[in-house]
Length: 116
Image (cartoon, rainbow, N blue to C red; front, top):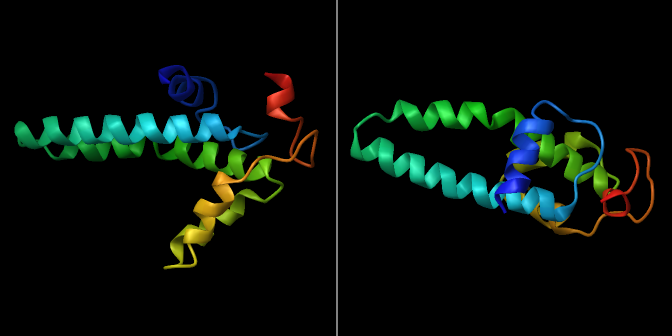
């Protein structure tokens, strides 16, 4: 589980090109939420709330990058991330992120399942 998180943070920190499998995206999100909760808890206990903000800023770019690459895997532009800013309509983004990727190469690159 942690290897998916580290893959995004180490290898694809500022990478918006290519494709990301569902597993890569959801494992990154799961570990990110767990770490954010732990950091928030510790920061609250020591009354240093700014620590959570630093973590959020540190994972902002990798999070946007893996989301854009996940959208590329289903054949959508990374700009579809902006749908998440629209109340209720943003739920469609979750639907898109849960879809199976396009089999074979598409306009955004080779199939990550076939490569891995």
